[in-house]
Structures are given as C-alpha cells and as structure tokens.
Amino acid sequence: MPELPEVEVLCRHLAPRLCGRVIGDVVIVREKVVRPTAPADLRRALSGATITGLDRRGKYLLFHLDRNGMEQCLIGHLGMTGRMFLQSASEPAPKHTAVHFELGRERFIYRDTRCFGRFTLDLSGLEKLGPEPLSEHFRPEAFRDALRKSRQPVKVKVMDQSLVAGVGNIYASEALHRAGISPRAVACRLSSAACYRLAAAIRSILGEAIEKGSGMSLDFSGDGAGDGFFYYGRSESPGEEREEGFRVYDREGEPCRTCEKPIRRIVQAARSTFYCPRCQGAGE
DNA sequence: ATGGCTGTTATCCG
DNA sequence: CCGGATAACAGCCA
Image 1: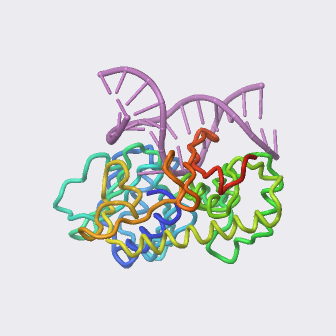
Image 2: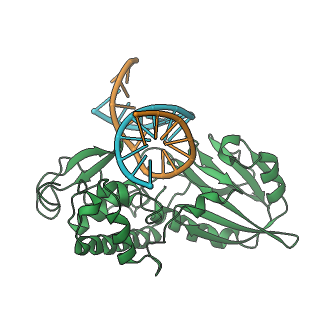
C-alpha cells in the first residue's frame, strides 16, 4: 500500500492503537529490512520502549519512541508489498513477516513479501525528501522552478521524492490526467501555468484518495494482487455501487472517463504510465 | 507453464 | 550533474 494516501490512512489507523503502548519481545525475521541498522541495535532500541506517537513523512511511517526518557525514532517504509497491522499474540506470525513485536496480548506485524521496504533507526532517507504536498511547504513556484531544471519527462519528475514527497506511480498518472498534461512533456518546457495546475492536481488527487481511504473499512493485513489499493479492495458494503476508481491508472484500452478516447499505456523510467491522448495533449 | 508484469528506491554506469 | 538501466524479491496473471 505504498503511496502517500495509503501510508497516511495506515498511520491514522495505527496511531490510536499503538500510542502509549509498551513494546515487548521483538523478533526480526528478515534482517535485510532493518538495513543499515544492526538488527541487535533495533531490538535493543525497541524492547521496553513506549510508542509515544506516529507520523507520516512522504511514504515513510515514523514511530516515536521513549525508553527511560531516551527519545528515538524508528522509520518504516513499505516498499511495494509491505503491510503493517495488529493481530492477536496467540496467532502465529503470517508468512513473509519481516519484523514483529509484542504489545501485551496483541502483536504488531510488519510483513513484506518482496522485502523492498525498511524498518530501521536510520533516518537518512528522510533527508532527501521534498516538501509534503498537502502542507504549506509545498509551494507551486518552487515546484515550477524545480521542474525547470530537468529535461526528464514530467511524469518521472513527479515521482522524484526530492521534488515532492509521496507521489508514486499511480498518483503521478492520475495527477497528470487531472492537470491535462502529457506525461511525456519535458519538465523544463512546461509553462508556469501548467506547473501550477499540476501542483494543484497533485494536492487534490492525494487529498481525495486519503478521504476515500479513510471512509472505508479496510483489511490492512490483506494479501494478494490489488489488495494494496485499498480503495478498491474488497470490504465494500455488500451489493450497491461500485467505486469509480482511477481515471487512467491500469485502464489501458478503456475509454477515458472525460472524452471516451481509449487510455494509452507507455513505459517511462521502466514504469508503466497511463494517460489519455486527447485530454493530455497531442504529444510532447 | 513460462515469461512478463507489479505499489519502491539505491546504485551503478556513461 | 543528469538520466537511463539494473538489481533487490516473490507472486500473480495471461
């Protein structure tokens, strides 16, 4: 569930369940997710610590800890297939659990089938992050100036975490569609107006996704393809209206919801991009 | 069933 | 510095 909205919804879900609780035994199953922190160090830092708060920054989850007055921060990143959730301590940890720890009669699970994620005391990942798109720190003028410096396709720049934090492959396509900008447009050649439209579209797309995700009952432990897209996930009330879903992402060949033209798929920086050839400009 | 795809990012090249 | 390619990995799908 990796992009900003998913992490935000997860953060809101976990915060009231974790805050104030004391961490018991810590088990690190997949050591590579703890890199570059030594697993023994992580265990030592967590065991007996109180979780005092939870935060999100970009796609990172921040766990604020207090151990005998010593404050520390643990960060988690879900990579592509990470999941974090609570279960009963009497159940065995599920397959692909990377790290788990006890919280009284519950157990916190971080599961990650591909182990692209991280669970670490190393905060260096945060330093490279650009502004939070939903905060005042995200300034359209600065965003435009950053785009002007690059000759890469704008889609690739929107996913650049140092430019704006938290936008991944799905919402990059969605935001460009909303802004009416071709994903192949060269970043430095966009007009100021286009950059501002894009900044606004990023904000609104992410904000709406959070809203949508917060309103659903979710299965945070869910597995399998498509489950990470929580707003699509199962767990909708039975029967009734189907969610509208994405405007372009994963809709190759299907009609654009605005103009009916078939959505196209291209590959940029080795990732799929989806766009409408009519709504998003004839070409570059 | 075999090969191509997948939500991320660090790193290595030219 | 910039930008492209690849690797890390397991599972799903056609």
